[in-house]
Length: 271
Length: 272
Image (cartoon, rainbow over all chains, first blue to last red; front, side, top):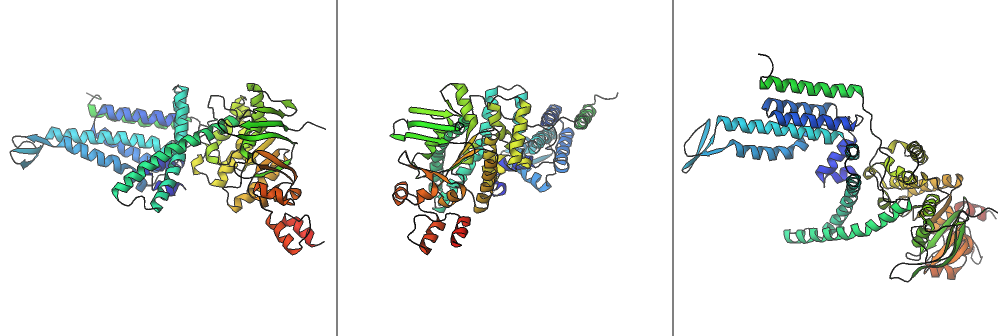
């Protein structure tokens, strides 16, 4: 089922399925969250290309070796942010100038497009800084199922209402995606997607129907909730993998090593 | 005689801006009983279920739960929700939580039980439905049959006296219908009364001896299924047909009042 879907709604369902089967699903979600947030802050804060590269590569390695996710899948996941990053870094890399300066120039009528030392440095640093951050977040999202992440937020004392909404939104996202998929297939079967104009109309109609279907469904769902004694508070049993000393030590060791590297790069160590 | 688990006395109900959906309904269900609820779509079966569980408030008449009249007080209603559970037709509309375990724990949590008790009941209900390994799964990765079992476990975790199943066979493949029938047998062994609404008369004949027939918001028959199927006017009024085995047996030896409805009955009947 999940595989049939993943074709249509790539990102979300892929990540969800990957997290559900991750090799790291037995590790405390709180620890994973704290770990990736700390690594992310260090990586962004350091603003250093070697640190960024190290974080990115080590996170990919963790996702691959510990998360047991196929490298092809990781590459697939990284494709989108990579395209985005390359484009934005190119913009920073290239500078316009009236005279040819820097390491590389291209004449463009009256002015020049140049790559200078500082601009090269800036864009490469930014690239790895952002890549490191993206990989930190991928580490979290490929290893921690959404329900556990929401539970972590609950324990961080986020308002109860927000937590309940997050649970319901996450749950009904899948229900609605399935309804939407069925409607789309039904529309395709009647040639609803031949031509741009018709595709747009069809997509619009489907959105409308989806809204109507959601309203109908909501009253049925409410009946079902009431039938089980719902009285305004949404409470479920949430089983969380326990915190283990070995995992904490491993995470701490990684972060300390990363800090060491940052100190080294900044020249804060030694004479 | 002990009090019936559930008794409705002259209950009527009308939806806002609608005619009477259920009219002057009186019916009683004993402990461990099995009842098939038959009738057209819109005949009042679902409304009947919602009245039994206390979601809808009768416009007139009284619902008795284990001999006590149910008022609209919160405590009474919670007791009725606990004792009489509904398994809804669409599992997608019932499943609410993001893990199977969370889903099944929803009812016990609402009953305000202590956490260890909730955990125990959740585990027991999952084990009883053969879902023990699925505890941490997300519902979106379950098959139709598995989802149906989760929705039954939902109710089981509340330790009910009666379970009302709204067209449980509607979206199941034949293999899962067989599994469902086995599950229902186990529930009966556990002493839980079962009311099953269905359009599948063959399934109804296998499942129960007693049938309720709804037509136009009224209970038109409450009795043995073989009496119900022997009454052509009743069947026509409710839009029902006779079970295939009945029809086949009737074709072989026409002119009798009653015929077998299940395989076992047919075998015995052929040896007469």
